[in-house]
Length: 173
Image (cartoon, rainbow, N blue to C red; front, side, top):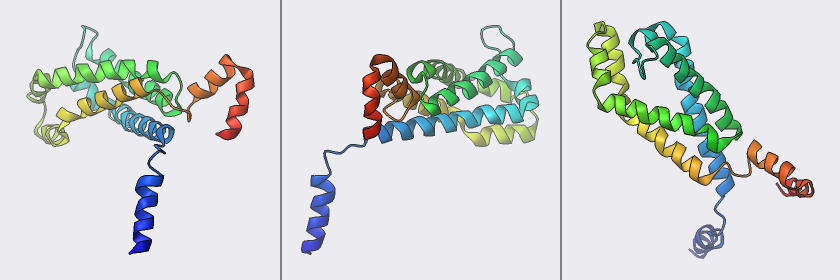
């Protein structure tokens, strides 16, 4: 019993001041980047399917809108994973996911489903896309507010550009 108390005290009391904030920010950055990138890769792999049913936003045409979304999903995800221009690289994905949520809630997706063959309708309805954009918006807003952390290219660049003597801080990394 005494051993368990010591273990619990050590876990919850002695280690409570360590928050592992940089590791947490690294994890959420990489997780959000990989999850967002897989949407872009899926759209590249099934381009012919998506271009038929992708919405025409801002009068750009559905192919141009899809190409823009693929570029945002792949390039911004790469930047996000590596922590390069982190706060800027989440602005476009946040806006695109806000527009996607608006489109889904505005029944634009349901209007597109009405024109699909039955097998594709089953595929699209089984995806349950309604909550996904909001999840990404939440993660991207958190990353925008919290910043990239020390495990990022942004941090290394800030050390290099602010004070070259602070490069010694990398030894403590």
